[in-house]
Image (cartoon, rainbow, N blue to C red; front, side):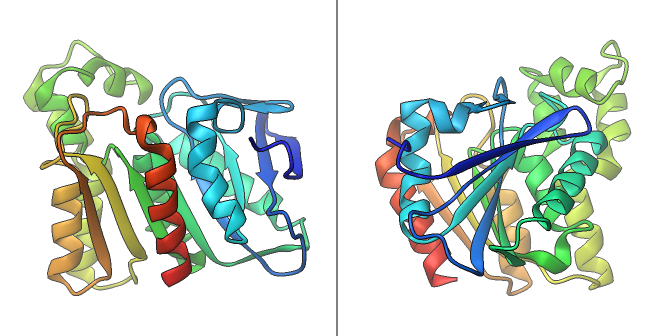
Length: 258
């Protein structure tokens, strides 16, 4: 499905990244920086979102709307840990070597656990460059993950913490790096501009609770007048990949409007 689009792969710091270009390549191509989720991969010449037909359907509308998509799965299944965010900063620096790309108003797009890294990057060092943010079934609240326990150990282990710690200790240990907490601190300090945001999430998500992740972050942003949109999928669980064509068009529309 994506065979007609030009792709480039390059290595940096023992990780691999890629850029897939729209059909008409010119100057000042707008960029979507994509953060892969659990069990994703980016290797020399291969990436799950470029290889798998269900995921390709999300990318195609954005490409056909004139956007380039750049992605890496920096440091593996990261759950938003600091090393992954740092790796994505380094990946962004590599993108500056491609003269056709316009990196002044990028979109960050995170899927599953990739959403936490995408959001923390968007409100972190890349904040001046980020115009839009998209969360797809995104992990945005570490406290919710810990208290619901289903992926508590995976989150804790990814951050090199002791998985034997109890729930309350884990909530406390992760509080300052929790995307929700960091967002509240920025709001209190009024020190940064938040990107235009789109949250796509099944309201029956069995892995990443709808009300405690996208709903909570969307409310924080909406309450301060930020441009934030919640797109719930009624009766849909975590597998939003079954709705690729529909959601790909929603994402492309959001990119073009903003």
